[in-house]
Image 1 (tube, rainbow, N blue to C red):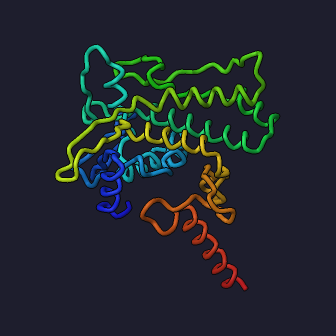
Image 2 (spheres, one colour):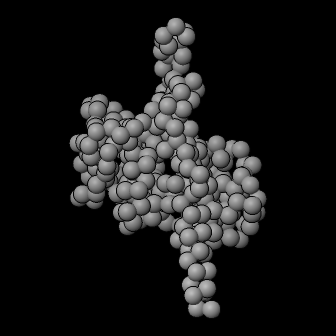
Image 3 (spheres, rainbow, N blue to C red):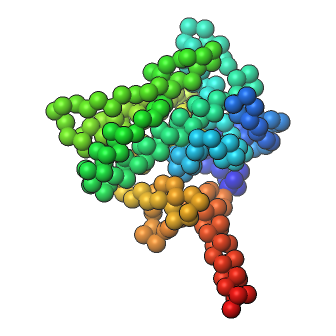
Length: 280
């Protein structure tokens, strides 16, 4: 991660809460579980890369889920449950319920769909947009509006893609994207606290890393100034916001000098050059 003290200070100054990352994580019974004590804390609201990092979690790739968790912790399933069960206010904790892999992959698929639609909207290709929009079948994470088929609930459901007759494909896609983000971004709370001798300060609480990811996704859509492109690393090919026209790979995460994709591609090219030299 980044310099933890620096990140904590930024979060403190901007009024963002910190979330924990444990010593390790394991997958058992199709759920992700935390292990050990708190290793460090970080502020998801500072990490604008969260949407694209979550979108990389391909269904069935347990190792990718573990890599993500060991860097960012859990996505926040217990917080969603806590709000879902409004009448009981059971206060689930992550040691009791873990996080269902289907729930994690559902959000990854949903965010990836929003990123793909955003890229197609940027390109202005309505034929490709219509082809993708009406063939994608989710499931789509729909926050508190999802179905609850088991004891803990997956909060995922197949959302229909029926269009509004009076709207074109572009307007329909934008409506769907807005609804998807809005269903998953909240609730957001704000708390006013005393800050020692510095006076009072309000803190924003976007409960759960996945909700912070949707917050960043909304900002990415709203700003619209960065083009979404696919990573050139053949082992990745995930979406990322291209902040520089020369950028070809996923950006380095906060606190890292080079992204895993760029480093992997560079090492592969180096090995290929060495092999050619030996064969020459």
